[in-house]
Image (cartoon, rainbow, N blue to C red; front, side):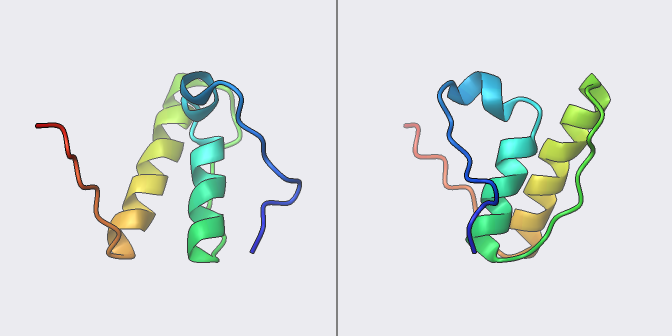
Length: 68
């Protein structure tokens, strides 16, 4: 599966904050469609990030924090 249209990230922090690119990444990695909020509010941004993390957790994808 590929993102359609293709997604290019130039500023990681700025472009991940609304969760849209993160959800697209999850969709491409897992080959599924994920629901998303399209409003430009802070709450919608948080809901998108939460949804991405929920889908990853449900799919048994783990976050390994290697900061020692």
